[in-house]
Image (tube, chains in turn brown, orange):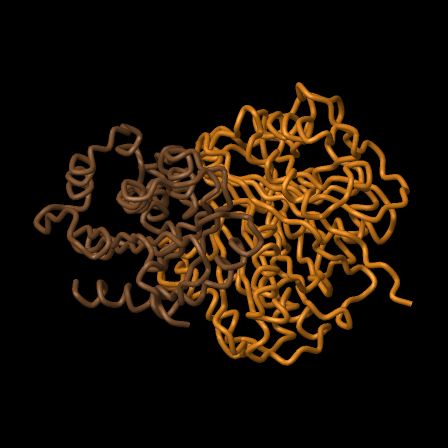
Length: 205
Length: 384
């Protein structure tokens, strides 16, 4: 299948202190911790959504990537969310485990525990954009467009969703995080083309 | 598009190894919930439904493993082994594997656990399970809170209809661990007594653990007596709150409506509803509103959480398999733990295990993150 110019999806890539929108750097600050990067991006995008600051780091990453795309192409309320990553919700899992590990310092918190599921970030994005849509969260070793492409095509072909916000949101640690989200509106985009787009950004950071 | 069936299956629960044990216990209205066998000084005594450790170990050793596996991996492997053998399928590139779980090997994060912490990566767990059987396709892990097991069936259908696979083994499992017990306790969501779905005096969930596996296939030749066709499936987010159920039941209502429309059956044709029914005040209330809006208040309904507790990502697959047997036996299974209706909208909660001629059932599930899934299943018509 040939890749038509018009079928290149809107996409956002985030890694190592940089945020790209459709191939151009949208915001960057490579000198600050992740939390500050997100705060800077929040200001840059003029996002007025205080709940953002209560989210865990995986949700912040996913939220910001979807925010950048939505500013280019607002979502239809039935836009499906099909995300994947490697580390699941381990960043929050480790926090919750730490809070129960020692009997003498036992302080489990519902505010942490609620984020110990990777699909919570799908809920955050659904609430933000009022998406009443299909959601699924997959776990793979690395980003592979072809792994979820059949399912995305199925959602569009069976008219379960007019579009799919799809991709990779992985937060393992302060130095190991990456997001690559793209918006599929028809099923003519080849997984290979998506993979190349990802690789170009992944290799350059 | 190709028809998609649920065929050979297996359950591992507090009742024992094998789906027959679980189904018979449910039919005999026996509870699988007991006083929990571990405590720490910060967790009040609680009840749960746990898989017997010695029984699991004995069954697992019969498979002659050559490596070390975690407890959850043993559950997943034992469930899969039965189903793979029954299916007689060669595991080639037309055969997929979907593993549904919320927390996977989360117990290895404990500093006392003998396995390395890296085993908490769900892909490591998936590889261990997949390699045990030498699957040739990459395992697909789905972690979508408490709808994972049901959603995995819808996804398997998608992969089959897109011709990626002809057969998909869907396996689901979750454990009762200090991680989940402490978390739900911090939410004040745990019931001290076995949970009471939809009851006026319900006060929270009972955690359970289970393994479940089913072959999802496009091949009518590989179906058996309890097989069903998946004729409608839909999911919808509530877009409301990450941990609190929607007050209008919006996502569940929309999921049910879409799945029923796809199934092309009338609401009165539904034999029963296998609902989620966690027995928290807000979840069950939300369900009653969604079912009422969907015109299903009079359809017989149960939650099986009163038998086996809430096994998180596995629960909806366990309950789907039990539902297949309910259909085959033409028997409505009682909703254990229910006394007096405690929801604002009416529900036809099944109070006694009773015979009823049936063709179809609806399975629903809802979870944190605002996710909801609805599946409609139909008994296979005789081909002769």
